[in-house]
Image (cartoon, helix red, strand yellow):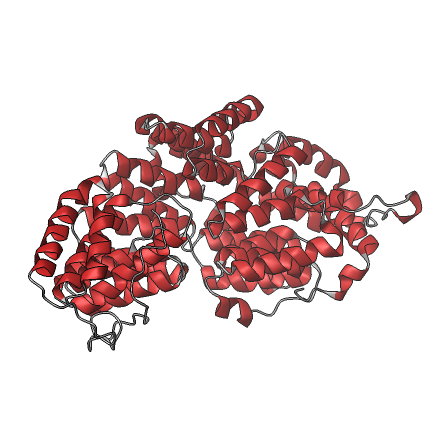
Length: 578
């Protein structure tokens, strides 16, 4: 079990802290942090009356600002941000100051979004800016230098810096905000979006608080360190958070990231049973249903979410996936565009829209969509991979090599990235690198069972017949050993080559077995029959078969080309059935 903070030994104290921070976040309009804390608090046992935490005492400034705060907060809740800011101008309390600055920030964001929807298409959203950001930065930096910002105001300062692309300063400010107020999840989450690798994560000085374990689990998921993430989440379940829908959803997302589709679907269905009106993460659930081509289930999910709230980003993405599965790509793109009008920073919608433009052969729009996805999150391997595919279609192989490399860096053990890299190297005539990529793809677990075939065909092209035969042998053994449906065309390709290979090396028994297997498939039947006739003619002429078991063709040392192929026994086809 992954080591957790000793604070988890006192869940009553954690529940009290959660209840306290829920109140603090609600007072400041930080609804997402309040929701996260509320979901965790709900997963813990209720507190008795005498254990309930008391609200923090009011300061003199709080009392002076009380009426203005109550009025402004009511306007804030109605999304009348300018009106709220107007009545908070003279407030001196920290709560009043934060709400004033936050109202100014959200007013600028709202105006930016309105301008985007009114004047521009979704692919040009990045050109519109929040005009209030520079003024907010000037004001907050002045207070920051004077040491007058509390944890919430530091969080807002960090958000402003991130929006202005001052990322290094933003990281420092978010770390400062977390030290000032460790229980505010919003600061941890913003910091998570700025961490690019595990080295950067280890270099940060973070407070030893129980919430850090939730942050690390989330961070491991984002950095594709799924084993560590699952261990951390399992530890959190074991200490008392077994009822947390947040943790269940995060584990489901983690399984989705490693393409363990069955386990992910199981967890998402459990999540739907526990929280049937939940919309959050349902776009990820729909991706899984799409991959499995589960039309009925995806249709039900789309109709269900449309009834709950058809103007949520996740709902639009689910409906888009539904239409995409039905090959109605124009309609699908329309719903992804609608999702982006609702939230221009929706990573999934940008990526999915790129896929739809690819289906519609609109490569320039696809490139724009993928680039916007990368602007939102540079760790999105799907967008890098999508850009690689787009440039591959355009036959710009040096470009696609760059993007496939970036995707591979983010997903080093994903065979699809390695196969794509191998194909790219092959087209650039960098054959040694191509061989390495194909073999590595096979070694890490080739999900599409294409790497060995491509490696064998590459050896075949280079007249490296011994190595080609070895790859085909391993491929056939792997295919026959799994209970999945076979790609008979590819199996017959391998058998056809091995039949000729054994025949040339006078191993007529193995050649005959391969030829018989070829006769079982439609596309290689004629070649199989022809080879059997050749073998019978040779045997009639009395030519002896090779009895050299250490023949270099399959069993001996490989030719000097640095391709790591394991030693295998002679191909035994008599014991397997396709």
